[in-house]
Length: 276
Image 1 (tube, rainbow, N blue to C red):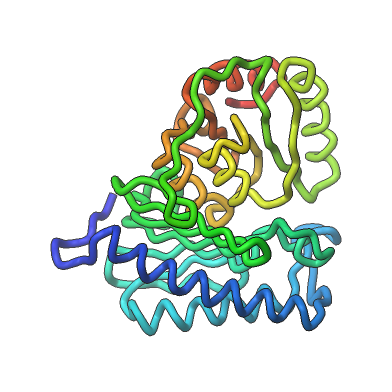
Image 2 (cartoon, rainbow, N blue to C red):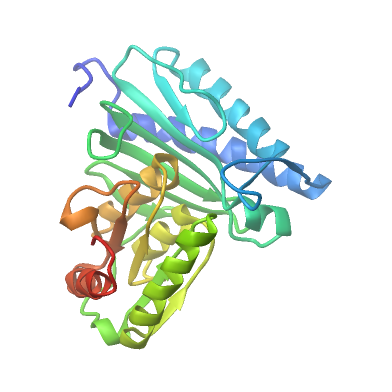
């Protein structure tokens, strides 16, 4: 793991930059949404869409990052990776929840994280993260060791939740076969918990765990930009986050939960065939 030298900015200083950029990008995307939006292309499947606003918002974020930190790298959803030399990388999802964005559902977000080391989950050290919902105006943020906040208010996960009282969030793949398998997991899990929620934006799901709106969230197939900022925010609020077999979160699996119910949710998912 590569750690920046002592002259690198602190996590708190990086958070200020990330916050300013995320707010600017959120305002830009919201105005573009009000002007109308159309599908520009599809990616992995016909239902996995990208809009021109996704691309334009990421272009804005990249420009603002490089103006502030020209030697840093950038890993984003819509453009090629920008290789930096500083040991810091920015992990960017310009619009997390693009289908919600397209349909006018007010659950989409700009997600920006700064990490030290290779831009690969399990290899990096997350330093700062911001998730902004431009529709509601909510801004979730965290810095390493500095705690998590929502609109300036400190966040701390709820305690003493049992499995049968847990509200659990999840998400689904765009691929039909994987969605079928995910539905089968739900038939096993649903009778064992309070209920299931599917919001449609992993960054907001993770922030919901931090804010006590969900007791747990799991998903298979997330990319680095889907969870980099939200995972830091949830961790700094006290959530336990794991990946396959209890290791680091990855594309294969991510589980974020309040400590009291994390292992019970993981066990229930393992019973359903998930590599939790």
